[in-house]
Amino acid sequence: QVQLVESGGGLVQAGGSLRLSCAASGRTFSTYAMGWFRQVPGKEREFVAAIKWSGGTTYYADSVKGRFTISRDNAKNTVYLQMNSLKPEDTAVYYCAAHTATGWAAVTLEYPYDYWGQGTQVTVSS
Image (cartoon, rainbow, N blue to C red):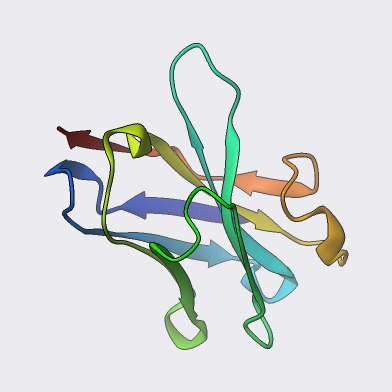
């Protein structure tokens, strides 16, 4: 089992920045990759960014590329999502997730992720 706890969400004006954190505990050695997803009420959850736990390869959704940066601190078992130049359309509940099976090709999809955090609200005002 892997437990994930997100933090760092909040209210920010458009153009501002926030950094989300996701602390992992439990069987973290089994983690292959970590991802961030977001969801707006009434819409499907969408992929934001992912990072390989070993090596640090990253991948981003086009909508956040150049504005968001995913990183990890292996010693702290923590993944971060630095969000800059925030837009009102970035408003959502943000979830981190752990992917334990190998297979980078599917990191943008929900099904490979075995564990999910409880989510943290990000609200960007115009």
